[in-house]
Length: 240
Image (cartoon, rainbow, N blue to C red):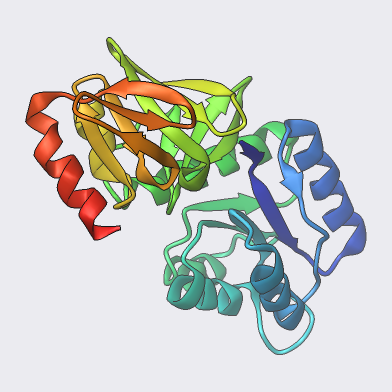
């Protein structure tokens, strides 16, 4: 589990610091703010943020829209446009890169919170069915706990266990998180390292320790193998 990392690109330092402080208060991880296109790309490469807040008007030749275009083409993660100018021309230019959310200065803490929620939700919706409490972006679940999204990387998941209309995610650090949904839908969102082994279990084969006729051992925990899932499990293991 980790906090959602947010990069702020804003050339007015006081405003940038205020945004970062607000993000920290909301429970997100605010990265060191940057002031221009070059610094933004360097920060994206180094820090791999989950979301960016981009001021449209930046000092220098390139704008926040240029950064957004670069994100769309090469990095593919959600962003929010930030501007003090909501005139039709600015909005029209911003719309060309299809921002998941848009925030106008001055803004409140609640407006910033809502924009983050909207940006994550709209971006996740591009890859399929979502709900407001659990999103999937790239190789991670974004689940809401205490009114803020946290990030569960697929690589940190040992297995997922069905609990009626919910699913319990077991992480390698022994933490557990519960999301709404059934395993039939969840398995379609995961990568090739995951396999259904039982009507009640999906496992991450990266943590496979042992397999016998009826059970598979993941991180010292024995998990039953259902007859109808055994053939797929064995074929997946052979591909590892």
